[in-house]
Length: 394
Image (cartoon, rainbow, N blue to C red; front, top):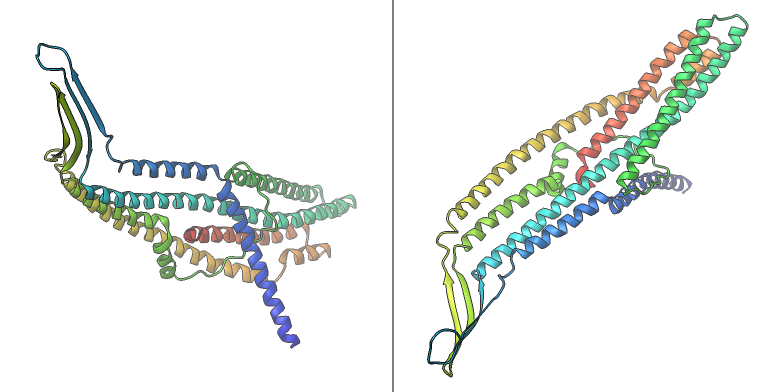
């Protein structure tokens, strides 16, 4: 029973930590989505375009005509005429255009989703960079402390004439370099917060305990591509453009049908008046010429363009996926090798015990520091690649 309780507690703590990390990241991204000014402006643009598309299916304005002819030589009373008319396209045209507008609305919504994912991807990349900068800062704080302690030790040895001025200068330069690295990291972190603040509509971002998970093996290329086909707005937009172009062909075919006019007419002269309804047809013999052919040509273009664009997107996606696998395998090797021993701490201990000279210590520790920095950079690149590959999940 005690063993089961301990296991359950471990599982709870593990998934609780992962959930907390995910929640913190999603919390910041949701905040940016709500406050981003570019997204707000683009939403207003989308709303305006949708209203404009709907207005294209309105009826023409009704026409009112009136005649009163009192001048001239005539024996009868003055002539008067009044007419009200309303013209409209064939009813099926409005049905076809309404379906076309609906498809264009879907296309506009897809454009907004694409813009939203671009901005959230930029924000996520900023958070990834911030997370790695904070990791590097923690490491550099330890390195800075060690460099200062080494400098103090070399200073004491120099005072005792156990080392020369060159060793003292090297130790001091190493400490100065670590100070500069820390100052540069603090500036980079501040700059990253400024960029995130801009994405958040000018409001400050508060990131509490943002520790992203280490890169992991992702799903197969076929599985992720299937998800993209169903959810990636860039791919969905291609389908929407095809459907819109096909519906436009139907619309242009309906426009070949005659337009209709209906109205009321009143005529009065010499005490007599006549009134009644009238109707007419406007046969589009000339203005519809070649429009159906043009719509068909556009539909064929959209089909071909979708096929080519989809092929290029898959090729780019596969290259990014292969790059991720390559980096992931190399990162795993680095992680397994460097995590076995705290090499920098062991070297510092050996130096403190006098087993290494300053030059030997510095060369050895620099090797491991370069390897650690390389591993952190690979971790950053992996997380950026993963964010790009899984952008459709944002």
